[in-house]
Amino acid sequence: MKLGNPLEFVLISLLLYLVLFFSIHTVALPEDNKWESLSGLSFYKYLLNAWTGQLRLWLVFWPFFIVLNLSLYEVDNLAKQGSFTVSSWDEIHFILFTPVIFWTISVWRNSVNSGSRFWAAGARFLTVTVFFEYGLKLIIRRDYPRIFFGCKDIILDYAACF
Image (tube, rainbow, N blue to C red):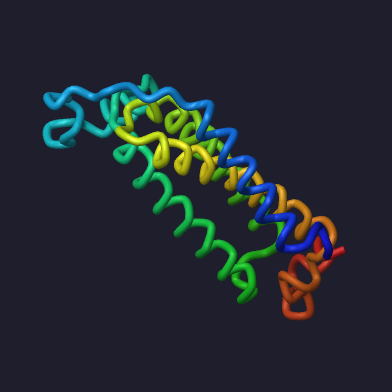
């Protein structure tokens, strides 16, 4: 698998970050922002405020980032161990794709609620990289399933490895 060398990857990543950095217009946040604290905020209200862009960026970015990456890491580990079939791996990634879309839109809308263009661009950059990760997972699923899934150990879903 040769998509490019590391220097090309770094240059493309840097260019994407710079484009995101210069496209962000942050606003000065008032000190009495009532959404800075999550105390008294229900989960539904949190999701609604995240969707409408009324939260600080870190309140939207970090919870989804941590939960999503832990989920993707655990799903990949279980697939490598042979605990998941290939089709189950596909289904879980498809199920996780809807929260990724929600998270991306929420980060985009709340990035103006950051005090720094550097952090806002970084959050946007990391949400875009999740879509690149999904693209890489599609390449693995299509071209390299026998290497990633250890298909010699899977008996029930052996046909999905081809």
